[in-house]
Picture 1 (cartoon, helix red, strand yellow):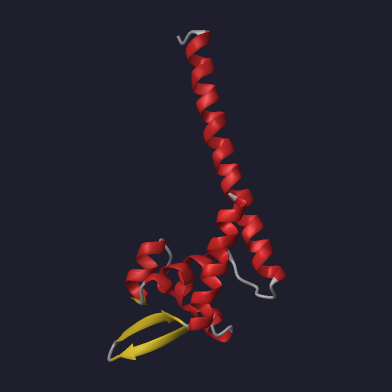
Picture 2: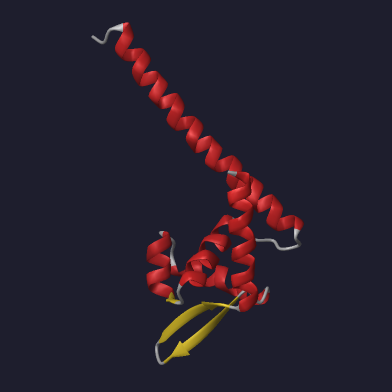
Length: 119
């Protein structure tokens, strides 16, 4: 049986972890709100993809793996980013590499600056 002291320590840690998770969700919501106020309808998934490809163009399969998403989810998200002119696909035979456009790279810069201001 656990004593009251050990139960309290475990409880504090769980509360701290929960509050860190809640803080991340709040910051994510604030960033999405900021992005939407700019007129874009970007989700955190879109932002994650855009951040990845702005650092380095990637083939779709490794991109999906890196983000823990299905190929179809990544493909649909890239469709949306292409419509906003934030990303473009480049076909090399059977491979498809996704690049951030200059507009997409600029958007990532604004997103990162906003994230740093909020945090």
